[in-house]
Each structure stands twice: as C-alpha cells, then as structure tokens.
Amino acid sequence: MALWFLPDQALEQNSNFSLFRSSDIEDCLDFLQKPGGSISISQLGEGQCSSKVQMLDFGSLLVMIEDHSHVMEIDGNIPPNSFLFAFGLGPQSSLFVDGTNLGSDTLRVSPPFSDCFEVFRPGGAIGLFAIDRKVLLSHEALIPEVADWLATRGRRSEFIRSVSLTTRLRQDLEVLIQCASALKREAYLDALGDLAISGLANALSFEWLAPRAPDFLSSSRSFERFVSAREMLISQMQPSLHSAAFETLTTQSSRRTLETAFKSNVDMGPATYARVIRLNSARQKLLDGDRLNDSIGDIAAEEGFWEWSRFSKQYHKLFGELPSQTRGNRFPKGGKPLASRR
Image (cartoon, rainbow, N blue to C red):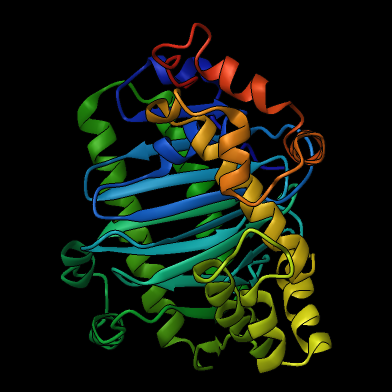
C-alpha cells in the first residue's frame, strides 16, 4: 500500500503542508471550503465519523488527499480559474463521483465552475490535483489538441478511462508527497511544484498522442434521475416524509425506478435519504453559534421532527452522539466554539 499520507511530524518542516483530522463535519466543511467555491457535506453512514485531509499548496498547484471513515456525501462546485483532476486511491467501488465509480482506471477532469457530487464509502480515498487554468493551458508540455479540449469544456466535467493515465498520476502523487516530506528548502519545494505541473501536462499529452483515442465515459441515466429527483426533493422538502415533494417525485417517475436511482447512488431510498439530509441540516443548526438561543427541540421541529425521543434516537444512530452532545462539544459553556481540530 502506498504511503498516501505524510507523517504528522513532516508538517513542521515547511509551510506548504496542511493536515486536517476531525470527527466534526462542520470543521471538515470549513477546511475544504475554498474562495469562490461552494460545498456542502452530509454524513450518510451511521456512527461517529472521522475525516482526514492532507494538502500540499504550491500556489498555482494544490494537491490534496481526502479520506473519510464513513459514507459521506460532498456536493459542490469547482472554484473559478482552476481545473480539478480527481482519481481514486482506495479499493474499487468505494468512491463515486457524479455517479461514476472512480476506481483505479478513471480520471475525472473538472473545469472551473463545474458541479461535483461525490459519495465516499469507507476506504474511498481520493487524490486531487487543482491547477490554475492559465498556467495549465499555456504550459509548454501541453499539446495544442489537449489545450483546446480543456478550454472548450465550459462547465462540463469529463471522465477518461485509462489505466496508464491514472497510474502515472498516482505514481506522481506518491513521489510528490514523499519528496515534499524530505525537502526543507523553499526553492526546492517551488521546483517540486513546477515538476508536478509538468508531469500532469505530460501525462495528458501522452494520452492524446497514444495510438488509441481517449476513452470517455458518460454519466448513467440512473445518476441523472437521482440528481433531478434529489434537487426537487431538497428544494421542496416539507416536514413530513409524506410531503408534497415526495409525492411529486413519485408521480413523475415510477416508485421502483426512483428507489433504484437512489439506491444505486447513495445506497438508500428517497424517504430515508430525505430523513438523513434533514438530520444533517439539524446538526448544522446545532453547530451554528447564531442559533444558541434556539432550543434543540425548536431546531428539531424546524426539520420536521416533532417527537423528541424519536429525533434523539435517530440523531444518535446516525452521528454516534446525542444532539445535546453535539452542541455541548462545540459550545462547552454556551459561548464561543472550540477551535477547529486541525
């Protein structure tokens, strides 16, 4: 198994490293949120989770490795002026991006502003290269055909199935983090970032120059149905599982088709998914310092949980702690929140 994460002590050697560990979803969201981007995180798997994110920042290049212990949903968009290249690091079937299994042979290419929907399952680590748009498109190692293809993506992401391409990028990532952990001189670290950008540009160019044309994948119809239904469900969600939103969904698509779309993408039916999302929304409100004057019962009612005992039981089953513990851990004396555990 490759050494995907640097030792903690390596972070003290220079300022390019950031390491984040936490069981708090709000902390994870704060860490991952980038200027110009917008993301939300929901925990779908039961029990107290833990997240680990490591970041190497070289200015025009950002390298990140992300891992979660439970099933997590991350919904957001790519920041402006950056291309994002993502590939799986964990076992097969552990990471799905836009409904596609990001296994050992698939690379997701995301242009600026594009949407991204990720579902992490245990062991679903992901490797990311975020590179400045202008730097990449003007790089001398990038052949014109690839530069033109990237420049015309608009806001549409693409999946390229290529064992050689993803293997090259994973090997570059491993060498990059191992070298970065050993280097102390700032000039060498800057040079390492430049080499990583050249490696990415070269890998893409070689893929286009290969005898066989790149193999592009398209999103499944199941994912398209799920996205459409999910957007409607969230935008029209009512306090009851038998809400108008759920009824609208079932009138537009057969119940079996809808169940299959949700099951294949988030491993649960639409009614269960709606309840989990409402529990996550309640958690975010409990972690909001501006809501300290609101009782836990009032927040639960806002999300459609009218029976306290049922809400508390379902909340504990999903997050591994009671609602009062969530608020108490964040605001131990009812005042300012504790510093993020990074």
